[in-house]
Image (cartoon, rainbow, N blue to C red; front, side, top):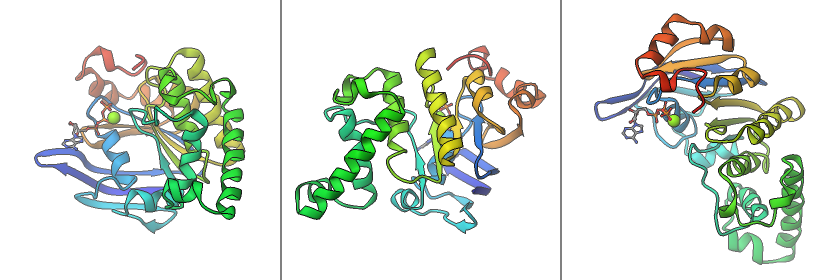
Length: 260
Ligand SMILES: Nc1ncnc2c1ncn2[C@@H]1O[C@H](COP(=O)(O)OP(=O)(O)OP(=O)(O)O)[C@@H](O)[C@H]1O
Ligand SMILES: [Mg+2]
């Protein structure tokens, strides 16, 4: 689904991504781990088109998509969530969801929503879709709540919900489970599994919580210092000598197994 070849992203002297090559197989939930500063988020940013890489290639379904802007990648079905949730705090949860297809079709919100009969019908279709997402994620009780009032975990769930408003092929989740309580983490995990099995979503998820990763992901890829260190099952990666060493360098706090 996604292939990254010898990717480099340098910021001045900082080699955030320094020769990464990896593959995200269609239908997989691929985990991406690595100590803080390993280059995981930067890799996502390059794949999603937020940065043009210093060198290297990104392929989506065999097509060279290197350096295409985020909205083009979005149109091609490549969605991502952000490490810091970026909901519209003064809009309801439902309206936050309804914003997504409008953004994809390139319509300005005001044109799309407030002009014409056709637009009215479209709005109804989008509302219906938003209600389905709300039901799927079991967040009906907060559907009319302002997104800004949600708990941190609920905001993460909303981020996931946004990826369900359009037809996604591959979704990149950046620490969707970080700082989320156990109950909500299970809900998020269940939603990811259902999207994967029932809707055929391919996922690549950055996560620090190895239990969460272990439950959802195969394979798991570990990055350190901008490079891929190891790939395998969660257990294989967790017991890999180089992986353990990379984490030891950053102190116990970030060891695999410790919650982020
Ligand atoms: N826009 C930028 N300008 C300069 N340096 C950057 C930029 N973005 C990231 N970096 C640097 O690149 C390195 C990799 O950062 P990145 O955020 O990709 O790591 P990460 O693996 O996502 O870490 P974390 O687990 O803490 O989120 C870090 O040293 C970071 O400071
Ligand atoms: Mg990061």
